Length: 192
Image: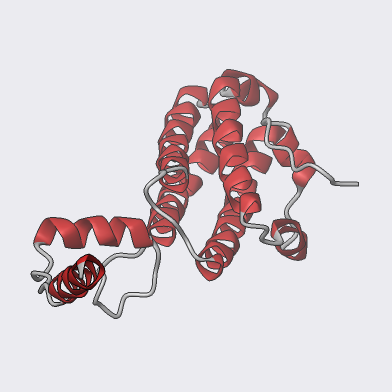
């Protein structure tokens, strides 16, 4: 008899738990879910990840600051070059911070798309590095900013590689000069 009573209580409790109605998600819950998925708008048709958005902001900064940095290099204005580089480094830093946020998880396809975007950024930034390298005094004056940038690039690279994306293959196909980037402290292991 005791067994039947316990069994009946167990079954009734199980039915009560399964019939509980979950309330609709409030705005805070939606924001948390958006952060965890790595995408903006949980129910929207947006397919770009947060990383692509931040990479786009870095790209805009490089496009805005790049021409003035190139001109300032030719004119020998080291302080202006430094200022432009600091803004670019700040954007790379924001991108690195987004990569290493613990609450966001990304799918492989998102990281692969981000990798392509990141390598394209490196290609655009490479032009700036070549201009700075040609002017030894400016390169010396901007050494701290360049090494800060190298650190940020290394951290983003580690993040991409942690997802086992073929960074190296894509970078080589776009003609990234790794010896140039090694000069600012961004080195890619396993390059022969």
